[in-house]
Length: 148
Ligand code: RB5
View 1 (cartoon, rainbow, N blue to C red):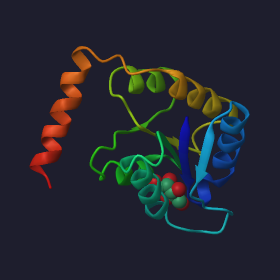
View 2 (view 1 turned 60 degrees about the horizontal axis):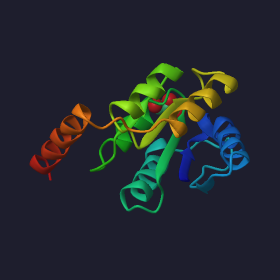
View 3 (view 1 turned 180 degrees about the horizontal axis):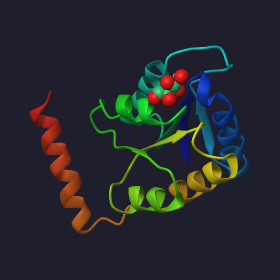
């Protein structure tokens, strides 16, 4: 899988761990930064990752900031992006099974590294269940059309 990743300064360390983890599992990683702990602004990176997923340049996206909240707010502004802020493996699994989430948002200041990587693993490996959930994704797409 090709995964676009990005973080602000608060998510930099976890983003690096996620990159290492994804590469070790044989995934391709497109790293949109940031590349240090220097203070920056999460919307810059949420935009780049959301656009990569929206344009089909990446299969999925993963965004990290302090809480994951700013990243999820920003990524969900993009048509076709279903960004899920997940605090545990259950949320990660359900965000794939029921919501077909294509962007995962994580909070570096909220999660330990081991839990975060476990969330990433579940989220990457879980397929969309389809069926009755497809109708709900279609309804989201209808709403997007109403809001150009
Ligand atoms: C940065 O201090 C922090 O506000 C940011 O990483 C994020 O948590 C915003 O949602």
